[in-house]
Amino acid sequence: MSIRSIARRLGRQPSTVSREIKRNPGYESGRAQRRYEKAKTNCGAKTKLDDTMRRTIVEKLRATWSPEQIVGRLYTGIIAFS
Image (tube, rainbow, N blue to C red):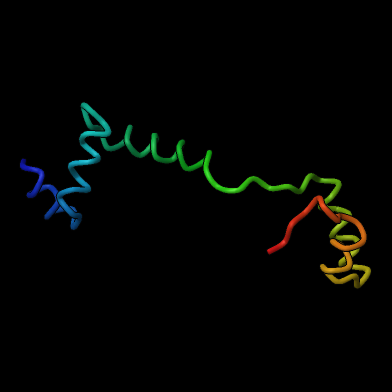
């Protein structure tokens, strides 16, 4: 099948199909999906909270501390909230 006919059947742009084929020589959809999933597990922001910090935050929230109080009194310079 041509790249354009594959793209039409999948409802994708021909350039997307072409890139996938170039990125994965000997293209196999299952292998491409596993590669994608593995790459996605390594991206994104990593948490700054360890178990001790998480427990402390939950404890203070239950004691009616505001998030601002927790950060201001306990974690100044350690945690950044945006």
